[in-house]
Image (cartoon, rainbow, N blue to C red; front, side):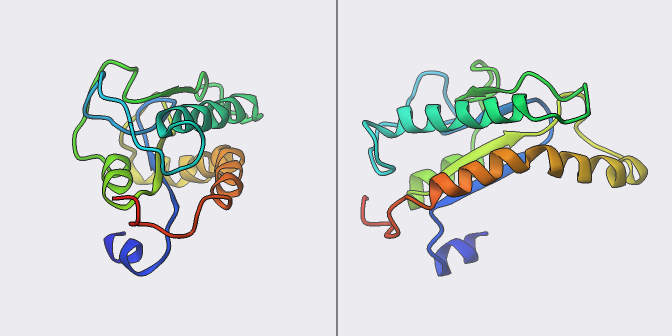
Length: 151
């Protein structure tokens, strides 16, 4: 990813992870520190991230997924707005490159899968997340194309 970001004009990034049903935005390392910059448009980036994450969560909640275990998507700065993590991709790409980076947690039951389960669950997870990803891509298409000028 580092090479891709350095060579291309990446303006938005989705990092998928298993573990819960949340749409997460910077900064994961704190429950108090908020994004203060204004590089994504709007009044401030914290408000933009919050609005974008809530929209994606609402799309994922409305989508007829056919899997009753994947429910109740929420938007948060970090896991359940209580647990913190450091060094996560969305923090790094936003802070260093000005990329609108979010993380979508795709499941709330299991962190790892054996090969047989993996073959069944991954296509289902991909299908479930298409509405949110497509909306995010169209939203990101309106972002300014020049990066690294805000530092």
